[in-house]
Length: 431
Ligand code: GLU
Image 1 (tube, helix red, strand yellow):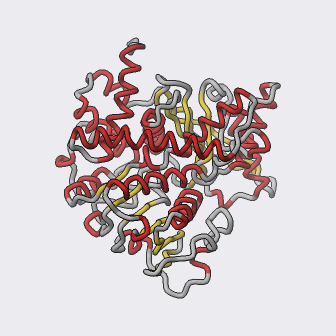
Image 2 (spheres, rainbow, N blue to C red; image 1 turned 120 degrees about the horizontal axis):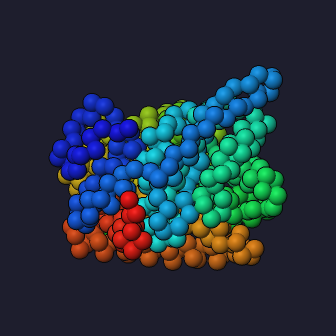
Image 3 (cartoon, rainbow, N blue to C red; image 1 turned 90 degrees about the vertical axis):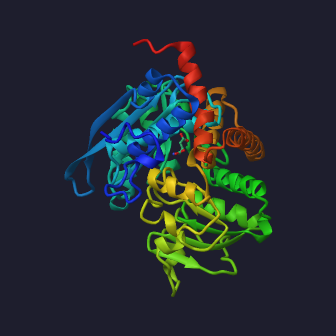
């Protein structure tokens, strides 16, 4: 479990970061900061620092050669005061219990910032998806679904794709759950293929929301998109969709990257033509002669930086090198608490993940509604409603930002946390 749980202000955190923060450390620091801003009841804050439940399961996987390996999976359910738990499921070698709890906490705030009737959860399996054949991934997912059967469900906890999982993974998860329940239950997961109850526009939604929030932020700071340069770390679903939309809207995408490094062209990259990670893994760097490192991409002199790959990339060690005016968080938790302090001092505006990439869970909510009502929405309707919800959430956060003179992150927390805290007050803590 995390230490430093009592250090509530930036100043108390050592910017040199001798021990890198876990997602849970960062999430708890951020919670304390926003709770102090809201002057929240300390009992409520104490409750919110801890998840309601963490399920740890052993998942036996039969390899294609017949050997059995036992993997570890988690589902952390942080808070459900506003509705069923909701959040992604990742397959990644660095999944830990702490990380799942921190990410689940962020889902609670993300859903609340978007004013969705959903709580926060996150889960995953400690596995490198690159080491799995398709058949192995299917067996693993079905068994994981079985292990989680008692705690998930359309009114309990609704998983979705995250790092290393995709619509096909959700289809297997939903099928295994439905077979056990004896009835087709599409609402048990979101992010499914549209053919089996998925929503049009769900896959593109996190990237679309990052683009919408970038557009709103540029407008707020009087940057004309036509004169705005953007560097995007990561060219997966979030990074590629954000980059392509921003390019369509007139911005110049000067750098994009994958795990091998970054390509950079000050005149702009043809992002509509470069395959995303999902279309063709690592195609970004395949034919490039001159690569920058991912760290060099972060330090480029651009107007907007979008970290959209993994967490903890902007840290106390490199935050002073960031030259962008605006950072829009596409990934979950790309900026550590220590880095946030440095960026705040340097007047770099950081628009947080819980707002910027919240389009994913928002369209997940639309998907869940479609599943419950057994009625599909058109792509046009999904994108229109997403646009409306994102702009409304942006305005809610902007109002707090202006009223309180705090960072964008704290403003977003104030919006989300106050909704959760009010619900707790009405329902009671029942200790
Ligand atoms: N994994 C996504 C996120 O971090 C989506 C969660 C969901 O749709 O439930 O926001």
